[in-house]
Image (cartoon, rainbow, N blue to C red; front, side, top):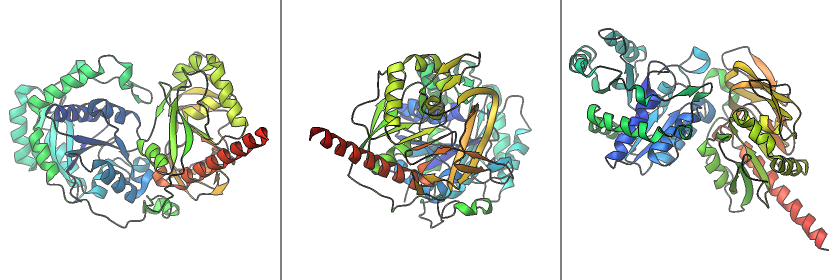
Length: 480
């Protein structure tokens, strides 16, 4: 399949990948080029910035969570029809699992998808040393796929000399530069960048970035590089094949044989400022399997929508809105009543915290939450159990599902994290019990991408349909 594509990477986090990727996307939109965008790894927030720029959803490419087939399928499915697919890397180019492997890194995505990569090089305090930095990244892997660089935070006066030096001494193309743009910096908090809608000037920043990149970055050259990417091959790799996740070999893959149905079932999706961390492919896969997703706001609505047969609470920042969530008593009551009545539910991370008894904020104030699950969530001041895990030993809505690749990323913890699964970190001896799993509930801190194990959405929706039929029979009994 012919699919023009490039991957934007860097030597480390904080070098300007998200800022420049958004600027490149904005510049392309200004030139009426139609891009699709992707984020390597499990991050939720950077794709929100992509979406702010291009107006359509951005998708995650993660070889641990989705398997190699899943990565190719997501790219093919969502890049088809675009003029160019632009992928933003994660961390440093070769930084992957456990901090000691290049597996599940940006390089791994470039390898799996055979995509040319362009490296953002932060030039603050750097001149001649740029050459060995680039050479090191180029030659660390024989098939590095690095085809060019963009120089970030570089004085325009230095650009001509730096470009000549780098191209002569490394043999790769310099596609331009971006000067220091302090007024366009994207602000961060503990889970990553602040959300785009939290700043009224986000659109202005992105526009200024786009205008600058049109002046100083070779967009035509990037398009040519993308056009020359090899055809995207249909490979038969069965999931993520590294030795340390052998137990996932038959599960961590995208299955083209999963249940697809027109038998729709109404599922409530918590979606507002407090609950905003979604894998777009999860939502679309649920819809393909028959879910009619009904968004609602635990912050602002009075109760859950009517005629639901299931509920979804994904991650976000409930701790930042704990007081508002706590005060919405009618919403909490409607959720607890539905769940106590047997309505199936998936709750991840922030959603899991919301369904517990209390959330304690950083000031020490405790706010009552839904109270369907036991436990209290509290701030820890540091990342807890951060990174990829394999979940084993549990059941999903009462059925076997096999191993599940997942990811944890949270600064809060809970008194009751559950014991339904064993979470094992790859390339490590660390493991712990986690997740609450019953015939109707799957809840806990791990985030799950459904392309890694489609038994999760299948079993969930099967239980939702069972709930719908039980409700239907109950109504018929009431009428008679």
